[in-house]
Image (cartoon, rainbow, N blue to C red; front, side, top):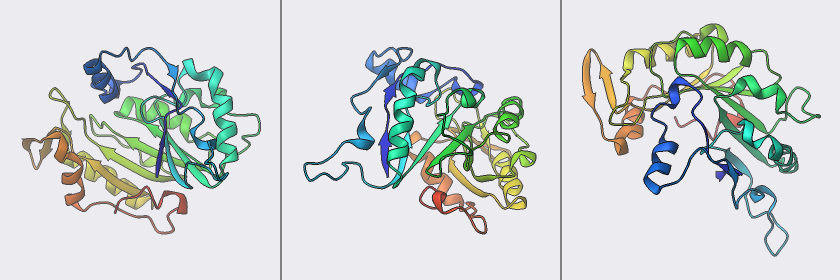
Length: 249
């Protein structure tokens, strides 16, 4: 698996952005997150070794995980990224976005019903944004769709949006002031996924975690490990091959 961030910087645009780890990390380093700029890794997917092979190996490529692939400020650069994605058919490019309402304005002319090697994850955090964003997402021409409910800040019902979805990832918020994650919300989404035969992954607990009515405060370093210990991941029958390396259990 590889990481590709062709640009850096982001702007808060959704309820889930309140305690964004990107903004927190930049603040500690004295970096202005609102400045969107290309990185030295812009052309990373098509860089070559001396022997002519690609430097970046085939496999899953986590794309724009420190920004948003659909952010407005990157409109002038995205077409070149699509060309690189198309060239690297041996890689599967996965990106998360809080700006799914911009999708049709950001795709290449030859997109058609989607590129086989692109997985798009629509991020939601509460019912209001789930209804708005997933209502758009379900109509978009994308071959591989995932939903990321992280940070999940309230109980949500997304079952009616799960047709055509390959994976739902759920997780809590990590911050001293983080909003709590109730384990009952996680289990409820899991049941929705099982009923619709959609793979489910519990990615991380929240710093403030509620289980059976009891509140816990967890260390950030333990959030993912505690989620794995729950053992509630679900792999759908006939799960899409492209999500197999993503799914953790």
